[in-house]
Length: 460
Ligand code: BES
Ligand code: ZN
Ligand code: ZN
Image 1: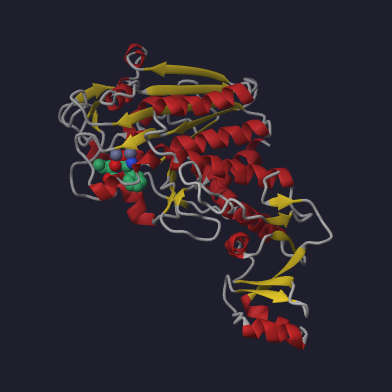
Image 2: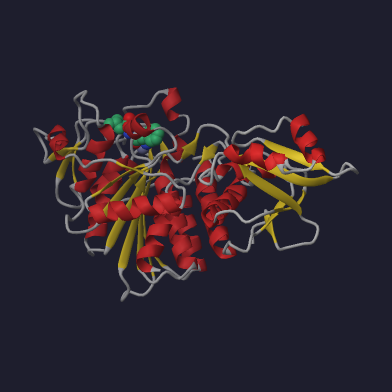
């Protein structure tokens, strides 16, 4: 069990959670003593307002926390860092859905990336007794795997290149007895992954294709594909300083599918799983690919390069073509694919695309259940004309100022997915730009719980 949770003890301090609109009535029913304490602490009817109530000996006796409503589960996530060390429990019965998500928020708050900074508050020991309503394993998997996504993203590109991403996949191979195949460097050309090779060839760190298989091949096949750009300089179409600053996160898609795979393996989900991660660095050198180049692709379509900063869709195109070749029951890719998604939906809301309306509904339900937001965007066919090329089968991105950049990226990907395969493409930011309860600044898992929920509903 994660260190932020513990088993029942006699000495734990109760946390009482009150909905904002009920606070006044609730206070009316409390002792004068408690009313005075909450008043002197300025407890307010607003989300996150809290009060450490002491007894007449001045000892911490109970904690009162205000939430907006029973959808407001992040509010509990601020407490682990605010409360004094000790063991706490949720005092009363609250709705099951709130409890399980609030407990996850508590766990997610305890994350720190400590590799290069030793002065963090390591000693902080605020533990929560897991309520009976919660399934400890489910909570642990959710938190642990989100932490893995964050760790992988937060690791600087210097320390996590394509080869280190291979090592992360090796952990799954060894711990979960999966089968791992790696194709690297020039072998990518020999084995016909021209686009992965083209994007990765400018870096001293050779490109890799990670191909992991696990599970019983008689079970339905699920294939996960993750964008593994360990650093995105933009290539010859170099990014601005501000645009490049967080680009160690551009392997966020890979981090998501690795964590999802580990989660599926740990609960022995009855599926036949395949994970494909094209892992590259988008670098600048004399051997970088260039605007105007034309490359063949694994699917056979020729592709005209417009902007070397739109590298993600190229490596995904070859990976998706390979993924399609064994007609999986479900194909899901995660990618930090476009700045346009960020403009349209902001940091917290991944956009997803699918060729299957039922799948969209399933994902939206799962997203709701898990309090893990996702927003459907359209594979709007008329925008496909922006990808027409004079010299190749298609351009990989539009060169007209027509907007809709996340949509055209998704349309480009769709050219490499067999139409009969139910496919989800998730365009994520994978980054928190500010510190909030349960969501510290830095790398973030987004849509991970929702997609796991979907998989569990389908196959569990
Ligand atoms: N990795 C970026 C997309 C990105 C940027 C994700 C910021 C999250 C935050 C991607 O490779 C990229 O640079 N895309 C370009 C495409 C454009 C050149 C057509 C973009 O979105 O600006
Ligand atoms: Zn880019
Ligand atoms: Zn990128």
